[in-house]
Length: 112
Image (cartoon, rainbow, N blue to C red; front, top):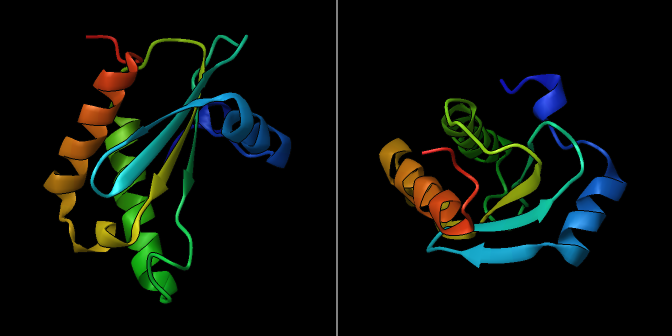
């Protein structure tokens, strides 16, 4: 589980990132990223019913993404939204991990 200060929770924050952020797409994930004026990087995860009608499957994908993101070392000052596409449910843990690493490297928000 992500720490509370590292979570994007408010609707106005999500809306701001969707409107002003830049997007990066991979096969089964989409990343919206925007710089913020805070000391922390905050992350939100979105998995719609288009991915799966079953909440169990959506929660499984969300748990996998959360665990991968929790172990990463981010640069400070970003708001990030990770959106899953329907083919994300066919990926295993390692497949999702490789895509997330690719997206974050492309967005230049990881401390390497």
